[in-house]
Length: 292
Image 1 (cartoon, one colour):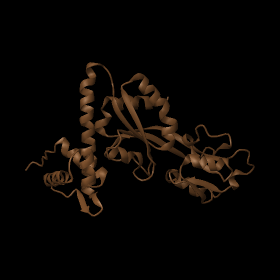
Image 2 (cartoon, helix red, strand yellow):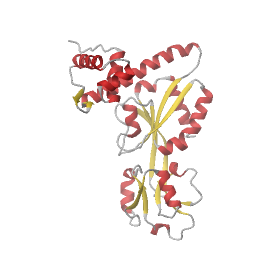
Image 3 (cartoon, helix red, strand yellow):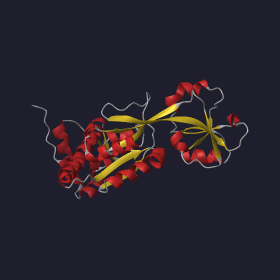
Image 4 (cartoon, one colour):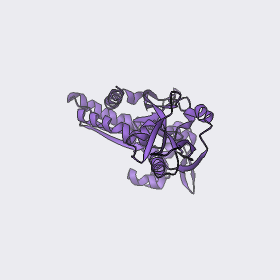
């Protein structure tokens, strides 16, 4: 046995549909099939792969660890089949087009991507970008790419969150952190700390721990926008990266933290196979042009 497994595209779509829907009956609807047909197809896929992909129960169907890996591969293979069609037709016209799925954390989606996408779509009107805002916690945007749900992710990159080994990418910018406080406050460092779960203090833990003037967070917000609103209303001060402070309201004041200030590295990640596609290459060119 040479280890070759012949899975048809429809089997890959069934695998993804069951994972997305969380059950065979629910997956049958988008597939235009029946629960029994989906169940039968899944047994055939598991037989071919020689591993259980889903745990069945009253709750529906939940992917096993092997199943989660299979689903990620299936999404990526199906995406490359779509790209094959687009790029096979494209060279004859010279156009670069088709869907382009981007995952980004909130401040990157708000402040980094808009001018990039404006240049991209001006140069390539046939490209159809969509941006999915993902919290940069746990797998974050890189996880969306690895799982096949995004073509490219704008990610925070550092020793605490290196580029996953199955992905490729590069650094786009290194942004400094700054002290943010109510405008005109005479002693901003005396204020309580407002923070949010997505704030990347893990990259600056040593610096953070060495600052005896920074208290434990007494107020936690949902995202950086809520933090800015709370700081502007006088609830406290915050330590935030530069992207989050783009177009900060006049009710807050931004104070430099000095030469030893912490920084956060922002970059992009994609899969090796998508890195070679025309739409992703065009997006990467515009992202890098924004660095200049």
